[in-house]
Image 1: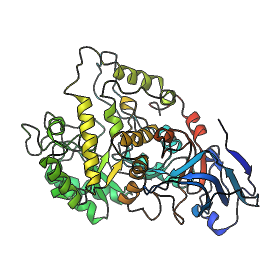
Image 2 (image 1 turned 60 degrees about the vertical axis):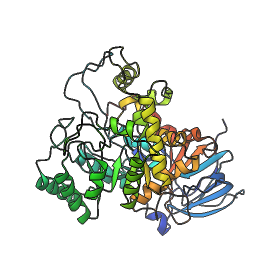
Image 3 (image 1 turned 90 degrees about the vertical axis):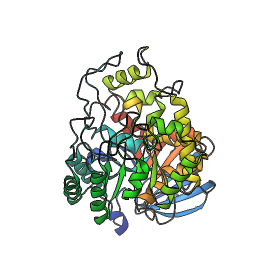
Image 4 (image 1 turned 90 degrees about the horizontal axis):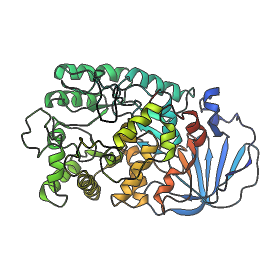
Length: 486
């Protein structure tokens, strides 16, 4: 494997005004920094710019003061004071991933065993150490937490990362789950009505959260109140719904819907107002023909009301028989207990038959997501990485891009969905999401060419966030055996 050749790095610190704006990095963070210079030139790279335009071969990308300052025809750059030059023949650059359904916790089932028996209650321990490092190592430079279990921890983590004290991506911290009675976990607050929903939104908005997520058992009155209060604060609300159908949520003004079309309950038999159906959306997905009128009407409704859809294909892939096993690097990152739980889930017991046809449902959701995007809908990407089914931070974000290609998107379209589309939803498309002069230098350096071979998105070597290049492998090495523990 050809290694990146560092030709010259001098004047590690700069007195230039632009570079001085970067936070000073703690010794903890500096251990994982590979490149930090006033000026960096990435020479002879294949540029996938995140806009779905055709890639451009043999380019030089220049970074100064944390920004992309130039994109020019490839050429050799002579050594100069204050400049780091990287010869990157055979490498590609793409924008940093904007993960739109990411988490900072792990889902644990106490005493889970090979027969799929376990004891109540399920617990979501915080992964404040391992998850941010895995995200950054995987190329995620911005992420939405999409439902927080320990919201104060997430807010403090954001502050420490932004201050250069800990490694990790930029965080859009979503408040605690907006959930009604019947929650899956004892760590979630159960709303008591619309007033409680309003108070919850305002309390956490005052403390710095930047988005909210409604959950499976919320009522229409509670969701409507939460959306109204969030919108007053200029904040958005997404939802993993069940008690509320997609059309009902659109009517209430929701901004985004999670899990593609897997959790829409509008056609479920016996669906009652404000109650989660027994099917939890499976029936609707199985019976909504992507080319039929019901799908067309729903997609048109979503597009007309500017409601985004977040694709989370990796978390559903595990339920489909015959899918590829996990990469060794994922297994290496897991704690022994997390690895054991994954293997138990992978080896379905004979007394736990599959419900319905997961392979057909997986394909059906892919088709609906594709139709939604073709109709002009804003499709976002995120894997729902809680460790469940082996979906891990960073690794899952890469896998989501690969599965979007399997769904029928071209590689450059899939990369746009995972980068520029997320930036657009967050209102940050002028700062991040594409490799464009003047934008933040959030750039992923990968060996190979994902535009031709999408699996090359896994071959991350350096991740630039605000112009500072982090060593992906060192970050991965620091969390080996830790995900699922802390």
